[in-house]
Image (cartoon, rainbow, N blue to C red; front, side, top):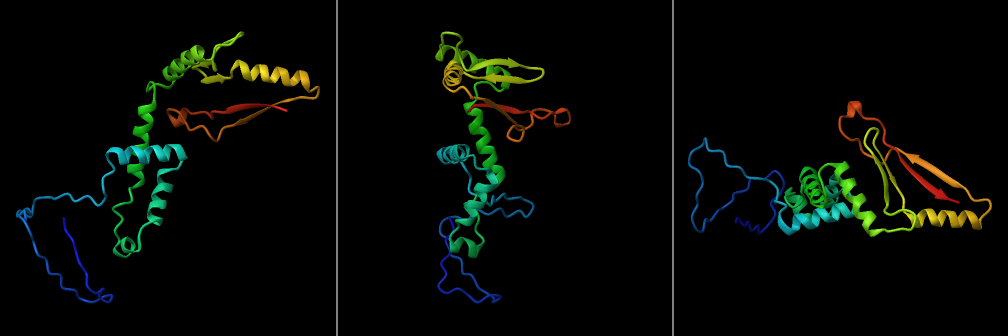
Length: 196
């Protein structure tokens, strides 16, 4: 560990002499061809990595936004010395979030994961007409139909009470990210039904 004590801040562009006192053993490489890697960031590891990744996942905050927030909250001393080691790069943050999300996956293949979830929903949401929440899964073209018996029964009850009721269907393609090869990718739409 190296600690610097500054009695007085020198004026800009002035020559400064630094006196170094080494305590303990100094084991610097004497060979000039030896490459010593000195990372300029504090590593994001252990429980800290998990808590940062979980917070980013919960807040739906991008790695770049979090990095900017960290930079904005630097102390005056860190800013004046250019010390950004506590601010993880967006690439490190993205990797941490990706690892966190992979831990929550039931299967790396999205179709297998949907099939597992479909089975779990059918066991947990038992209805009189049909069970579950994931009703239909198709592979080519990819489609998934989600609804449960309570939602259908709620709509039926509403239509019976309200003679001028309507069902609004909306589709958006901007919230679903591309899957697979982008050259063969077609827009994926999320359809949403609302009773009025």
